Length: 160
Image 1 (spheres, rainbow, N blue to C red):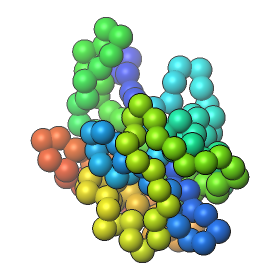
Image 2 (spheres, rainbow, N blue to C red; image 1 turned 90 degrees about the vertical axis):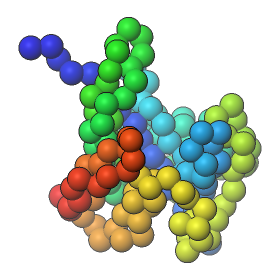
Image 3 (cartoon, rainbow, N blue to C red; image 1 turned 90 degrees about the horizontal axis):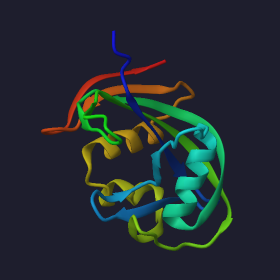
């Protein structure tokens, strides 16, 4: 058996003391909450704090896990891997502890948005579902399986 290769990614829903959520505008996906792939040898928390800092300029403290998501569609690979079968993402709630808003090579804008206005800005269906899971968080970790191509399709949704 050939061992599968997976992409592991993290996302951070960062809420300030006024109830505003940190969003960044990416060049490819529009408005999203910051996050990205975990690099080789990097732990999840370090990856998340790095990604949020790189994409927005904000330093965060990671508070708690709210969701685990599997995108079970096939994704273009890298470093000689032709196809990556599954992308696994974990979303955390974060609190800002410093830094200043900025942009990066990956983002064209960053801003704080009122919690109730975020869904007005996010267009990507998977990101909308994951943000809604944050809004509905009841203390149990949300789990979803979905595919994003050729179009978004939610395959399973439950609490664990």
